Image 1: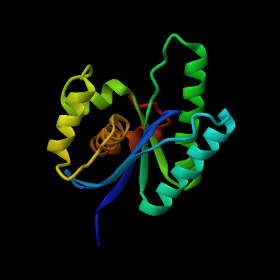
Image 2: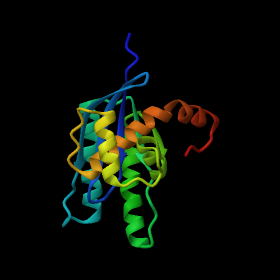
Image 3: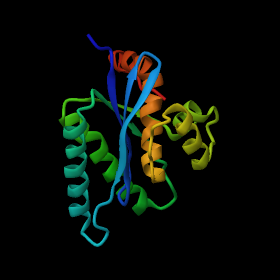
Length: 172
C-alpha cells in the first residue's frame, strides 16, 4: 500500500496560469510535471475563462492528483485587473473542486517562506530552491515554478491545513 500523495499546485492568472504536479511520500518530494496555460489573449474574457477551465480539467484528468493547492492572489491598485485575476482564481479553485479534490489556499508570502526561508524572496530565488527540492523539475516559466512552489508548500503544510478545514478555520 502506497502513502504517495499527488499534489497539483496552481498559480492563478488570466494570461498565464501556472500548474505543477508533485508526489510526496512522507518528507520526500518528487517532480511529476509542470507547465502553463495560455488562453488566447485576443478572445473575449468569457472565452479565456472557458479555455482555462477546459485545459485545467484536462491536466487534472491526465495527472490524477489527490489534492490541489492554489496561491492566493495579490490585490493590486488596479480594480479591473484585480477583478479579472479574481475570475481566473475562481477557475483555479472550482475546477479541482468539481473533480472532487480538496483545495487548499496559501498566501504568496507563505509560499516564498516555505520554499526559500524568507517571505519576500525573488522569483529567481524560488527557481533556484526548486532545483534543490525537485532536482528533476523543468519549469520553463515563472508561472510553472510558482505553481510547483505552491505544491511544495502544500506538501509541507497539508496536515495543518486539513485540521484547520475540519475545524472550519482559515489557514495562512
